[in-house]
Length: 162
Image 1 (cartoon, rainbow, N blue to C red):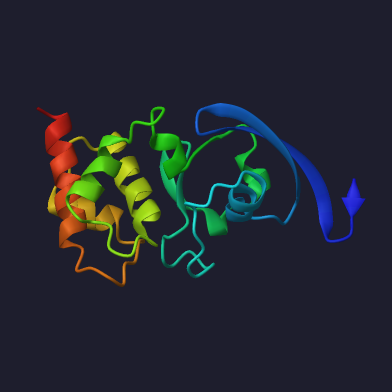
Image 2 (image 1 turned 135 degrees about the vertical axis):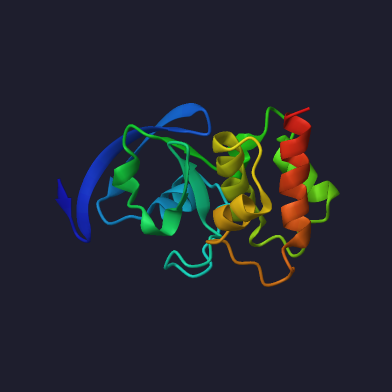
């Protein structure tokens, strides 16, 4: 079906552990689908060009910038945002540790940092500092020197390996 501004596409995918569907314009970005259709406001737009990482989500176990992914591309995929990390009211260990280590500062970049860290830790249970730096290289924070963020990620990795 063609409509002004693009073709409508029906997509079905798993979002934060539950099956969902949406009819989207072919040019709609994933970030806009998550924020506008599913009201998932942890996904933040910083630059809109894939440079800052504020919009990072996990797409089929990989950290991606949702501002660079078309919504139609997630058809049949699994998408996780920070809202999907919680188990009921219980925060994920990475979320708890970011808070306890003070790795949140203003909080704008925090959800993207957490998603990049979560993707890293699901792939590498014992990351080195260089591994962490590489995994977060696409996430910019203007408030910190990154040390508290690195410490939080290492703390979670060590807790999970005990």
